[in-house]
Length: 216
Image (cartoon, rainbow, N blue to C red; front, side):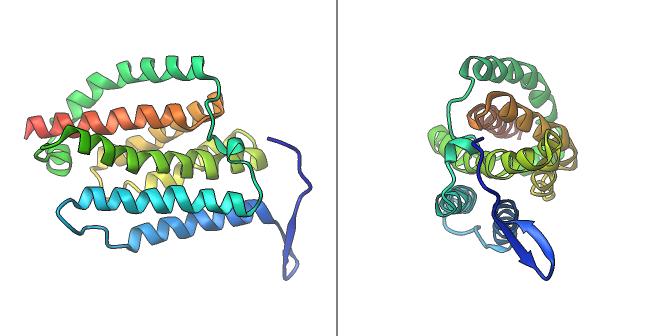
């Protein structure tokens, strides 16, 4: 990231870096709003929720960066090290595939993810609208801020709120996101881009829905 003069806010003697504080606060408000918002509406609640998240997780943090005169390029919105990214995405997808096919047969996964897939394109678009902005929020907007401030430990710290967004999902998945979220973060850190974590995340989510639906 580029060098910039540090902007500081003083809260009754508590001197806080303005940029980092705003980004952490916005991430927190976005997650709270998503939690309390009622997206289960219309004939396709999953798509409605994905559209809401595309705005909250994607448009809002991007607008904040632009208002703060930050470059989205510095927060993972770029191609990055594409050769490494493509190799990691394909390799990790191959490793993940048999694991997904096994866990998708578990009753709680089949109950949560199983559905009638009428339109595969609609399913892919819904998942892309869901996980794409999420990767930007967690692995771009938040993680690159924490890495700049605290170093590589920021990759792990940014995983914690990501884990908590999975609390309503099957327990095994929620526990696994501590490792999976760190892996996505490492991919973004290694490539300088959120694109490859997005592609892998999209593949995993779509495959588990398809596999769980076939099991049901």
